[in-house]
Image (tube, rainbow over all chains, first blue to last red):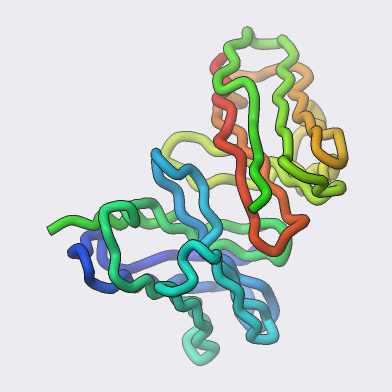
Length: 115
Length: 106
């Protein structure tokens, strides 16, 4: 059973960078696809992007200019960086495992963008 | 972007009744359709993939059908623990898109 745990600051100031980490246990991140998904009352569930087990990465075009997803195999972690955040980026951020389907989800972490 | 539209927004049913949830895609997604269940304060959890394949451990009262642009999630005999929001998601495109959800109240 793969377990995912998101972590990072719960409050980020406008125009700054949101940085989150997804720590994975019970499996190697090199074996799977990983996605970041966010959920907000106004936008619902939104796929931010994914990184494959071969290292290929794709981003939601609406966020592409601001987002970076990467793998740290030494720590078995998946990371998300979102630059120049605004209030519209306030959401619960989830990491998820799966290529076509989010088979496993982290519990999610609420990130609020506010000064 | 493939737009997913779910109906109804809210469904109020009694225990033991049948619930039928609909999901429509703005273009053909073949059978590349997933259903998730989300309870308050929790992450979504996988119910059904490939439009009709139940995930491990999902009770048989949950069933999915459809292909192309029209899909249905049926809960044959509602239990109190089925009170949740249900989302559909397409993966015909690498860029997953989700419906806005149907809230099932029991």
